[in-house]
Image 1 (tube, one colour):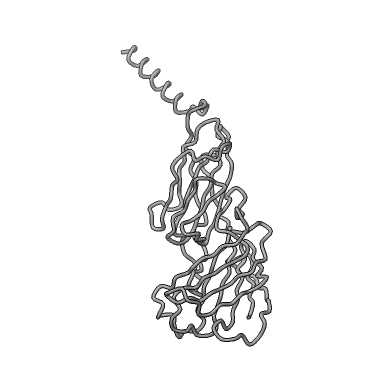
Image 2 (cartoon, rainbow, N blue to C red):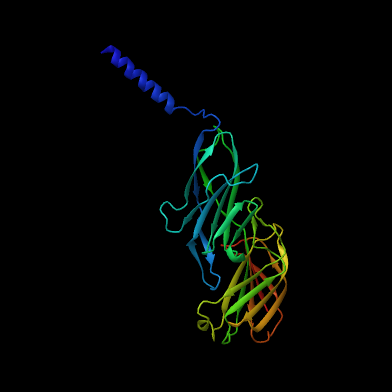
Length: 291
């Protein structure tokens, strides 16, 4: 009987010793939990003036080698409505240094994250995008639970048309001379500051015709210092024929800033645009110009 008790005590002691181990050897993995704390953001739709608080449509975690920038595991994406939305677990190898990237974004376009230095979306689309990144080295000092705070990494241009949209308009084309559609997640800046063209095809075009104060918002990845750009806006019919075009010179764009141009678009403007600046609780700053 004493022999059995001794064996049981030894077995329990061994089990407790194993459970209390925190000296993982190289090649073993640690579970690290990440919690996105601010996945609820102010959101402005591409084709609406209404701004409201909403959950980001998607949260994505990508893990790269800090040395090679190669993905070391499958990219994990959560969609709004998923169970445990905002909570991620990564199993990281002891002794290795990683770059962790989290993106929060709106819309339905697929995101491409092969490299943390060149993140893009289908069709040169740039959604309302938020970013978190850090470099972690896996050892006994690494906290097993970490909070993720997302920062907005786009600047926005919003066009408000005070006059009514005429019949026939089917697409709004926006062409800029600066800004970009590819993000370097390591710096939070655009990869190339050479401009972009994006066609915004109207859903149910006839529902827009005859209405005033139609609004369109485009997002740009930018340099940290911002960019002053020329933006040309073309209204096209379903065959691509030009109906009206306006060019806005020297548009100031900054990350976390909403720049608004408001005025008559289809009829001749009655005044030159003039700037005003006001702080906005959902954006770092908001600039409004009347054209």
